[in-house]
Every structure is written in C-alpha cells, then in structure tokens.
Length: 94
Image (cartoon, rainbow, N blue to C red; front, side, top):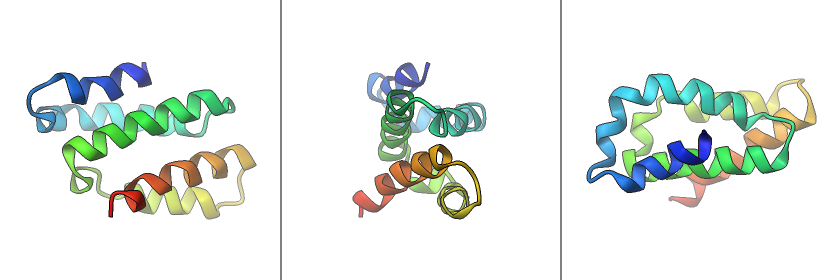
C-alpha cells in the first residue's frame, strides 16, 4: 500500500491534488515507518519522500517534530531507525 501511495504523486498531474487525502495517508505511513521490517520501512520512507517532494514539506506540519520525537524517544531501535531513515528525506531536499 505504501508503494502505491508513493507512486500516486507521480501519476497525477498536480501532486497537490492529494492534499485532501493527506490526513488519511500520513497516519498510515507513520505506522509503517516504524515497522520491524527494514524493507517495509524503506518503501514507506520512499513513499513519504515522494509525497513531500510533490506536495511540499508545508503540507506535512508537525512531521519533522514527530520524527525527532520518535528518534529521541525511549522506544525500540526499530522505531528510532525508521524515524532516522525518514528524517533524512526533508534534510536532503534542502
């Protein structure tokens, strides 16, 4: 499902058309960003990166804060790894 979401932004003419669906998509992507499987986390990270690239970081308020909070939380290494992996995407775009 995350792969499909990532590809959707490249298949439509204006990725900003996805803005109304962002509140439905983001919580689900957050769940798979901290999945135990590195492959699943990677697909989710690429999907979110595609959405950020197409829609703009401003369409995802609070995402960076959530990633930093997850990265610094006293949670499992898997969750921190997923957050670290995705935190690089917005930084890479600067």
